[in-house]
Amino acid sequence: MTSYRQPGVVLTDHRFTVPLDHSDPSGARIELYAREVVASARADANLPWLVYLEGGPGRSTRRFVGRQAWLGRALQEFRVLLLDQRGTGLSSPVNRQTLPLHGGPRQQADRLAHFRADAIVRDCETIRPLLTGGAPWTVLGQSYGGFCATHYLCAAPEGLATVLITGGLPSLDATADEVYRAGYPRIARKVEAHYTRYPQDIARARAIVAYVAEHRPVLPTGYTLTPEAFQSLGILLGSGDGSHQLHYLLENAFVRTPSGPALSDAFQESVASALSFAGHPLYALLHEAIYAQGAGPTDWAAERVRGEFARFDAALTLAGEAPLYFTGESIHPWHFDSDPALRPLREAADLLAARADWPALYDPARLAANEVPVAAAVYHDDMYVDTAQSLRTARSIRGLRTWVTDEYEHDGVRASGPRVLDRLLALARGDA
Image 1 (spheres, rainbow, N blue to C red):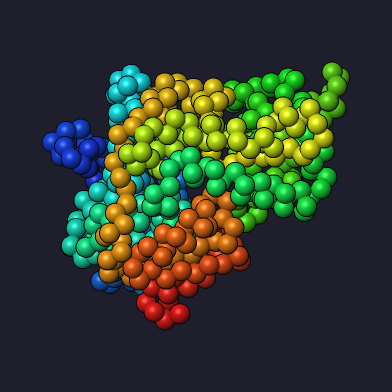
Image 2: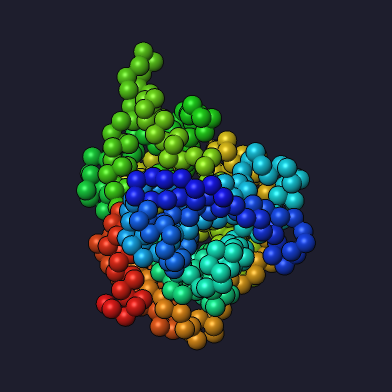
């Protein structure tokens, strides 16, 4: 272990080895990385632990500096563990560079099947006794981290003192098709709200997608920009300032050149950064698999369901006069053709989409008998997680207390973390 300091905190790096497949403890093993954070003034105190599970899937935990966001509030009473979930960050990272170490596409897909919430929770339960001496800990799950926390309540409630979920109550039984069928109308509402705020972006978006459809530009990173890829910038619209980010990106799209109008370098750089999965390829590889529970293959559900919503068809938009509808929070086969970070993984992704033997993640009977204090922030019109599905799940977990709010978007715990965490802790303790 290595310890060091930032303003107001002491940090300690932890590394653990765990089975790739927890049902085969003598088989292949992977490394997990986690960063312990404690307030400097309480570094030697016997504090309860809080483990933070980041959103995703496939995103490493946030790299805080000092006592940023919700962390400052947590450090008032907890010793915090920031876990890089398996396959992310420093925890045996999974990407186009590392997966070939384990064989071809079939072997890669079989390996990737061990990177969902069920394995993440088994990881937590493996390392918890090593850190807490066996005491249960509090879990804070943001977005997909909340999906993991919900599975935790089913699989190992004895390891939990309290569960806090922000924007991450999953449906217990919705198929991937049902998730996306509910998702496209939510995205449409966000797009319409964006155009109401920034009506000048209607013409801008149409002009950009027309240019992209004609020229199919290749960005400096090697990303092939297609109309569908450009539309996927709508993923920005689910965050608190995402509409503003999208507006500023669009206003900088074109420059005049000797050959006529062209996409500006600045625009291309921003788009490449927003669309690339180089830093989190597991998000693309496992995005549909997180909804799979033995009901057959997901079979590229988002792409199939998109065909039910004609307004998201860029070609139809260009043939008429309607505004372009952006998309977001969905993964499609073309992602693995456009993005150089994903291209070598296309065959493995197809095999995952065809996989039918995904185990169940949630146990409704166990959740109905839950005894762990649970509080969840549910955002009124969350673009990423369906509010109606979240509230159905909330009613299915015994004792869960919800805070339904329209003050924040999906990233509320990031945007106003101390207040959100304080409210959830009070709810879980029955003080609010």
